Length: 150
Image (cartoon, rainbow, N blue to C red; front, top):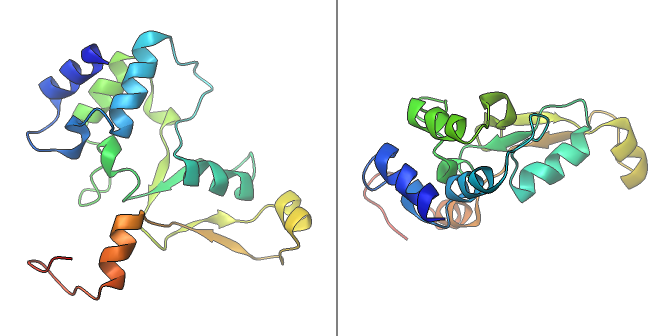
């Protein structure tokens, strides 16, 4: 863990949430530094894994802006910043192994035939991007703009 955190501290902007040992970026870097991450492996949060199971093996692994914040994803630029690509590349993880990212409420994909049959869902049922519990609480509290807090 110490080597991964040192790498993050060298690359990530001061104050960024990835600078915590509990960030998903720190965890993936620790993994990649301990043992090589095979090229076929995809990075996914729990919600991403479940959404992928619903959309099927042929669909891309997809996450949302808020789940990917602690991986370093920049929702304002809608991309993984260069410093994230540099860090993941240093442990052998290619950008093709990272999730495609959609905004909360964005389309992840349609539920695949296998999942529709297994769970009794109708054709055309869609999986949408979600959010984290803290962001959902912020929205539920009725905040409207910058400067408001929960």
